[in-house]
Length: 353
Image 1 (tube, rainbow, N blue to C red):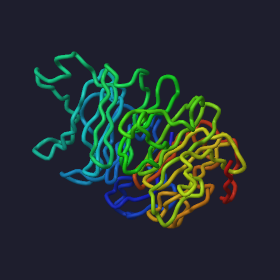
Image 2: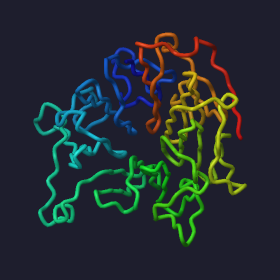
Image 3: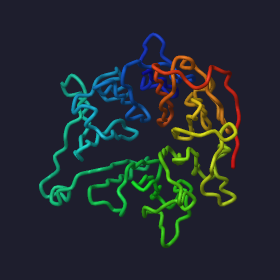
């Protein structure tokens, strides 16, 4: 497996090569090769990569910038890692335990994920609850979902963006809730019966089984089990806007998007103003803000239309996963298999339906 990354790299959060450092990596660059790789957390200034049975922390931390391993429970026992603009804050265990991140600047060899002990009189201990989901929005709001859900249907995924939270239920329904100041990020118009701060379904997606969701900044995305891509959000008053996003002037809340004439979409990643998608043909397409190299086009510009990415991974294997951080993007390439498409020049194209 090979990991390729591009985007903002001032803090060495993507690539820590002292002999060839770039503050911005504008094309997908191979970062690691290992049998088992996964990007578990990508923040503004730091990245945590699962490399086989270890967590590798890259980028800023108070005690230094060098890549270092994180001590603590094995990655298989960690459900998710979380943080904010200050860096990694902690992790949630698969058994509902909460781990806090300790940098190790006070004499320890390296950082550590240390299990948090709740006070005996805390609500979680008193009710014998386990934390199932935890997410932190960019505005500092925190959502914690315990074994006693605040919604009737269990959640499989809980994500946070700039001012809201997006959840995927076990029944494949998308719920959003958060600040009423930015309703476009909710993908729905808040009403008295479905207020902004209450977990409510997105009407446009009603009856459509959703397989995956992704959020970042002011944008939300969903891929249906039928492999259709849906986008919503964007910031009101922005000077540049992706063509794939709904038109706020038309009171459009969610848009069904076509890429390259309407091919099936397998994966989607959303950053702070950009989106990348993987098609069933193995192609990677990107759009939005690329001024820090996060689109991987080789340039630093905003792309309002979809651009097909090309790179050294083509012909070496098959893209099996992708994602976005705040100002970065990554691809996971399985070198044991080959892509469905041969290497071709990158093209531009977009369609909406």
